[in-house]
Image (cartoon, rainbow, N blue to C red):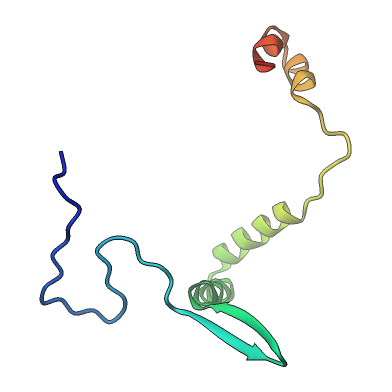
Length: 101
């Protein structure tokens, strides 16, 4: 059993943030541009830049990214089935009453 939730952070150094528990994004910058105030998430921006870099230099990563984008661009068909139809189609109609609970 844990007695307390304390962390000793004496005599430590770091190039970035240090946390003993939760660390909230303090690397968020607010930018005023043409009277519009918006938040720039520097962590997300860094990840996107890394993603673009990997797509440029790694053919396998680029292919993976393209396949993933195809998945996200796929539109849903209008012939969606409800759970009862899926159970019937899968010959599991005996589960329909249980599914309604």
